[in-house]
Amino acid sequence: MSMASRACILLILTSFSICFPNAKSIHFNVPSVFNFGDSNSDTGALISAGIESINPPYGQNYFQKPSGRYCDGRLIIDFLMDAMDLPFLNAYLDSIGLPSFREGSNFAAAGSTIRPANAASVSPFSFGVQVNQFLRFKKRVLQLLDKEIDKYLPMENFFEKGLYMFDIGQNDLAGAFYSKTFDEIVASIPSTLLEFETGLKRLYDQGARNFWIHNTGPLGCLPQNVAKFGTDRSKLDELGCVSSHNQAAKIFNLQLHALSKKLQGQYADSNFTYVDIYTIKYNLVGNYSRYGFEQPIMACCGYGGPPLNYDSRIACGQTSILNGTSVTAKGCNDSTEYVSWDGIHYTEAANQFVSSQILTGKYSDPPFSDKMPFLLKLKF
Image (cartoon, rainbow, N blue to C red; front, side, top):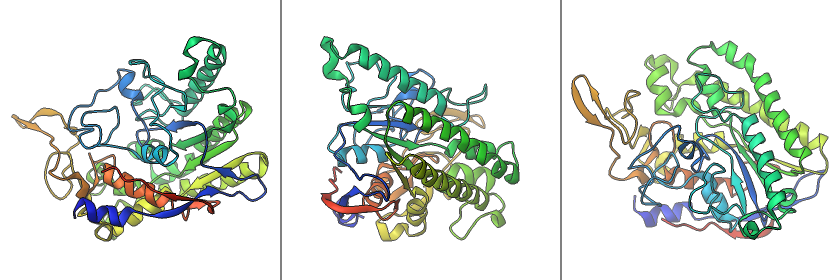
């Protein structure tokens, strides 16, 4: 499908203001955004920390080079920032090139979990650590506001008026399947969400009032999980996704939704929006051709060819010796035809589709109102 055709599919006119029952309404004309999460919204933290490195073809589409994002281009958060007429968020840990944090900061780091990290964790920056980083960030900002560098920092009232975004929990579930039974994973969800609730309350105590919470996507549709846990076809659903992973995600999301509603009732002076990312992504996988995609599960950048083009021994962009032969995990010719970029993360085209659906307001609780007409800008 051509770029023009895809643009016609994705172009939407939507209302861009949110109303909350029993609370004041929030608009998307916020002055700043503070984001917490994992690789779904990491704009450079894990790379800046020196824990991992990513090489071309990452970033090949929009940035023309690796940008610290685990994608061929932009992430969902990039499209949402663009929708709010705000610049892309710089990673909190990115200190090179005078990064501006005027309109907020991104604390998300790839591999992060809600639960505290352990020795086997990909990322040490669990949700609690990210909240600690925010508290340090806010404290230093308030100390430096009268200095010459304050043009790079949020104004004091940006912390209360800003939007606090969250997309985390996927790694808690996905990682657990390597060592726990399904029942054990489900039993651990309440304590995981208690950890999440604790972090949200700490942010509230620091003045946060506008909370935007993404639920977790259909983990079972990621090539990585299909390759590892889907060799027995009886464990796959009608779309070719691992049923147990998706079921765990749905149980997690039900409890996350309940938590969001509980907190809205508990903090009447705040706004909690729950966004159903799972339904958007599963709909994309199930109806991919309708939205201009050709490959719903197979990775664009990987090794091994159909049906998954994913091999856990060699990551996208890397060269390795497999069975005595040097091989490279290369990108496909046209990533806009693929939902999956590298077997774990979505392509820019898929992220744009997800963003367009978020912006309809249909997948949010509470849903958007109709006070602010908005046209999603396309930049392919």
